[in-house]
Image (cartoon, rainbow, N blue to C red; front, side):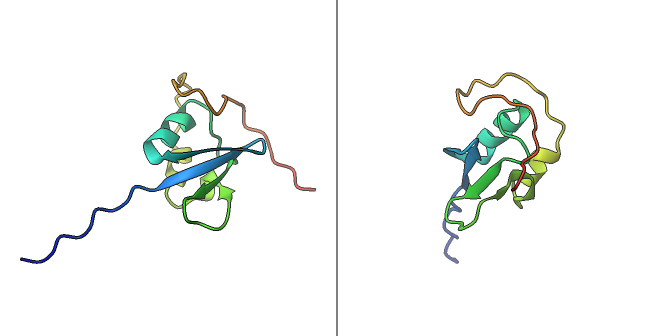
Length: 91
């Protein structure tokens, strides 16, 4: 009988919002915060073990969460705060 593959470790991400880092969060927690308006598509995220922060919408796994229509329900999670989408200006 072949050896069973080791269980895959769940991916977790940190989120940078207004220069403050939150997390790590797993995908279901981020999904809940996206739907509640706490994490926006242009917020920066980094997967544990990764070396570069990217916008949440550009993350290969989390991008689908931002393409769903947000339900705007109130989240039970205390942080990060609920916000409106704003453009990031680089200067």
